[in-house]
Amino acid sequence: MFDPEFWRDRRVFVTGHTGFKGSWICLLLRHLGAEVTGYALEPPTDPALFDLARVSNEVEHRTGDVRDLETLEAELSAAKPEVVIHMAAQSLVRYSYANPVETFSTNVLGTVHLLDAVRRIPSVRAVVIVTSDKCYFNAEWVWGYREQDQLGGHDPYSGSKGAAELVVTAYRNSFFDPDRQSDSAAVASGRAGNVIGGGDWAVDRLVPDIMTSLLAGRPTLIRNPQATRPWQHVLEPLNGYLMLAERLFEHGHEFAGAWNFGPPAESEATVGEVAHRLYDLWEAEFDWERDPDPGPPESTFLKLDASKARTYLGWRPMLDLDTTLAWIVEWFQRYREGEDAREACMTDIRRFMEMRS
Image (cartoon, rainbow, N blue to C red; front, side, top):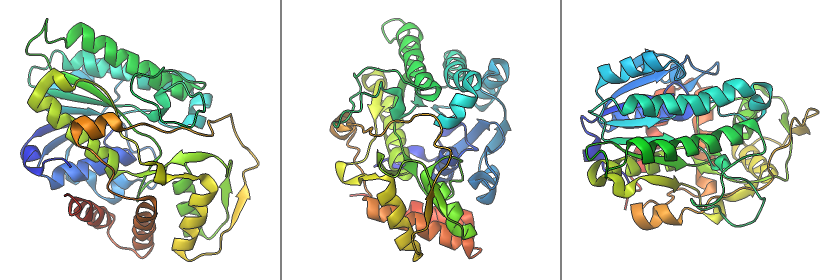
């Protein structure tokens, strides 16, 4: 697990901090004592975890678009971060079909801008670019993708994430090469997917759709109940990103490159199975309807091989699927009962940290 002492008073710059994962990592970093500056657009959903958990009270909140290089670089320069975690993205597959230009410009050009600005900020020692498991060209095979497998995608979102990975490689080789720039930042990418947890209200995502339906007392619309996904609690990859940032900071370019953070095989389950378990945990009768609009095609099977992270970082998943789903139901039931969203998150963070070996 990440080292809490490393993060105490560490200056960290997080893009995309108003999103679901961004809000969680800001709360985690502040719990560890880091000084966090966030740069992002306004929260993408209503309600939003960023607002409910009052994340803006915890960080230096800066509103901006990663497609605006001048403003992004000015905020980076003012913050003088030691670690940069890039999470700003358009992260929805169906949305990418309707808005391909926005998807590519945010995910690809936004990554270009972040890395181009960082190379002129001397305080930065470590950069983690968060991409996705969907950066891989999905051949629908049953074994996990490894970091050296083919990149690409059948849809704008997947294609944009594969392209973002190519950007990271090009910038790392061109501008963050220790043989040419001995004092340059160390840059790596983190790949994870099907991240779930309390406080997610994203559209067209299974767990938020189910939780919203349960809160509203209406049936859940499900597109493809037979699709298999590897599910993981949001704190699992965040743990990996922080561990990776620590190694980049302390050991430099030795840990540069791509890293998978995926759950074990036991956490693979179909959409229908996850939906059934969530309804059971909520103690509600399973009530769903097939979505009359199946939308554009999506992959039916995709998993990651996280052997590299386990071997070289010592990272390993901490939560099994049943525990993950139980925590999510507890979070949303506390929200339904009017409890504080920030405290619900902190409960999960504290008990996750208590699991460290």
